[in-house]
Length: 202
Image: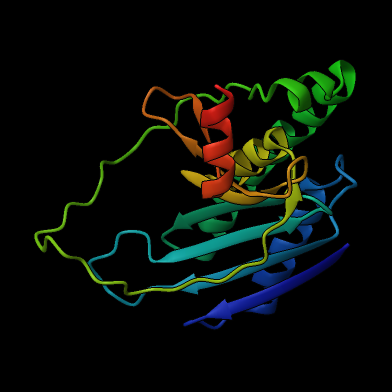
């Protein structure tokens, strides 16, 4: 497994780097599906920020990405928090893979039934005074072909509210998203011709 260490707005000593490498290797000792792993160090220089040091761990397998963020007054504290969250994510990932292997995936593929996801706490949504907000950030990424249950797992591992992917069963772009009640929704894209055909058939 390749481990890459990066630093942004800070200088990281070799002792801290070695500490991060050692703890990451220990955290992944029971999980052999990780292809590469990146540890990113960052530091805010605003004295009003109570936890200026942060460490983000990003691990990639062939199908999924696991990400965990830790914050603290120094990078030692941030590493410990990131590692604790990273280990929980890996345990969840491994448990889901084991459960999926036991029950098989045929039912999920044919019925489209999605596994339940526990509700995640939220700090509230950001409100904008401007009724016509502008696009201030653009992001591009390659859509990965997977089935909806794989996309839900990826949603959990990244901690996002939605995940865009290519449905491996239909070849169409789909979105899984976290609902307010804690369950998961699935948005399936269809063309105007397909919608008309479905309406006529119904």
